Image (cartoon, rainbow, N blue to C red; front, side, top):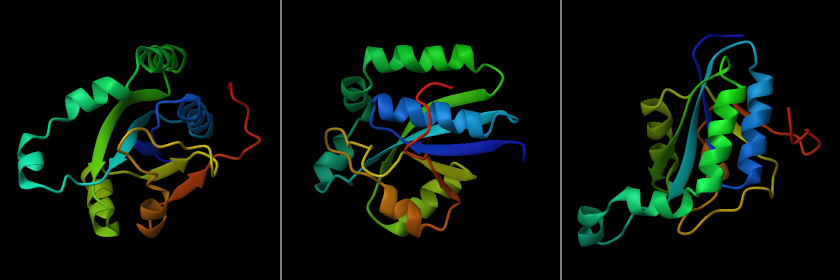
Length: 149
């Protein structure tokens, strides 16, 4: 295994994301892992919307207290493996924009939930196709993986 693993996981703020995080931590259990939870949104279209855009109100709406508590618990139970976890919003709809995002956050690998388990939240989309076309290393959580590690 390599050091300094930066793993990207699409986030829908549900149990499917939490299970994917737990599974990913079990896969990379020998190294500290930084997890970037990716929330993919289309770019705002009007100039006014782009100028006035603030991600915090949107994140406050979708990042529930229950999900925050579950992340806190994951941090506590995986203190040696989970070096850092944070949510980042991706704005775009092109492969090049996704490649740029992956480069900016120096992502080593993407971990995807099983097909059909990711449910986009308000004004977001499933980034699976963009990630697959970005030629980044991708592992997909098997459907049969246990929900608790």
